[in-house]
Image 1 (cartoon, rainbow, N blue to C red):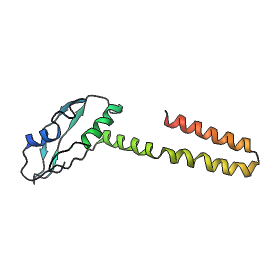
Image 2 (image 1 turned 135 degrees about the horizontal axis):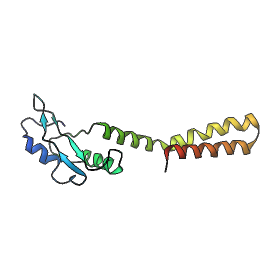
Image 3 (image 1 turned 180 degrees about the vertical axis):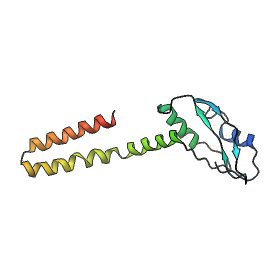
Image 4 (image 1 turned 180 degrees about the horizontal axis):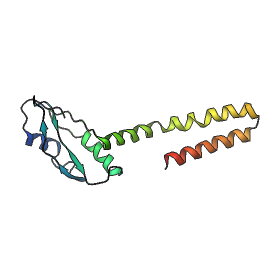
Length: 134
C-alpha cells in the first residue's frame, strides 16, 4: 500500500478498514511502515478458507476500497489464486473454441467421417467440462 507522507498508522487502518470489509475478516494487523513512510503493509486474515469463493470476494472488495491518498495493492497466495481463477474464467470461451474446432477440422478430412469428427469434438467439450468443472 503506497501512502502519502506523514499519515499515521491509525489513519491508514481506518482509511482502509472502517467497516466496509469487516465481514469475512477475523483480524487486521497494525500497519508496518517502510523506512521512508511511503509504503505501509497490512496483514488481513480472512474468516474463510483460502480456496473459498468468499475469500476471493474479500480480495476484490479490498481492492475496490476507495481511500484518499492511498494506492491499495493486495498480494499473497490467496490473491494470486483469485487472480489466476479470474484470468482462466475470462479465457474459457477461447479454450472451448480453440480445442474442439481444430480437432474436428483435422479429423474430418483425415477420416472422411463427419460423425467421427463431431463425436471427437463433443468428447473434447466433455473433457474440458470435466477438467474445469461447472
